[in-house]
Image 1 (cartoon, rainbow, N blue to C red):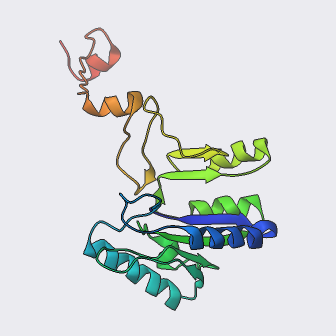
Image 2: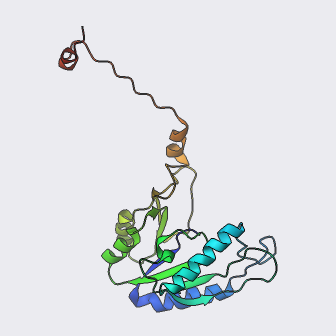
Image 3: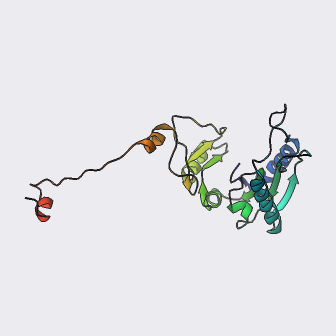
Length: 205
């Protein structure tokens, strides 16, 4: 997971946080090749230390830690699944791409506030909208500054469509005709028409 931010309408926030906390306690961390394991270790020590630093800085900045999961003892760069709420908008937890098992939750009161807060980031790879109001879901999806937006759907990726983000998330597009265009050479050739006024102005015989 990269920039793991959840915006939830205030009236259902407590219920969602409780469910997320329960899910954290149920997440099985360990050898990814072992049966029943749901989450493995991070790839290297550098990333492990980076994520741990983000967690420590988030706590120091006033983000409220709801729960941390458990990790196995022994070798491996395991990070506890971690859930924060009331994360300040200027916290590194909220601003940076973490690439670790850290989830940050903030509440909102209006649709306009949700869109504004969601777009207030330098990153915009993907987003998900969950709502019972189809019209609202489509409206919010159009306003979100992200390369892919799912509405009430799992995070499916289709090879015939595009993959890529806005702002600092990725460069260009992969997959589909947009991805194929990256492998094409584009050439522009200009030749004035000698009978045109433009050609006469530049002295074409």
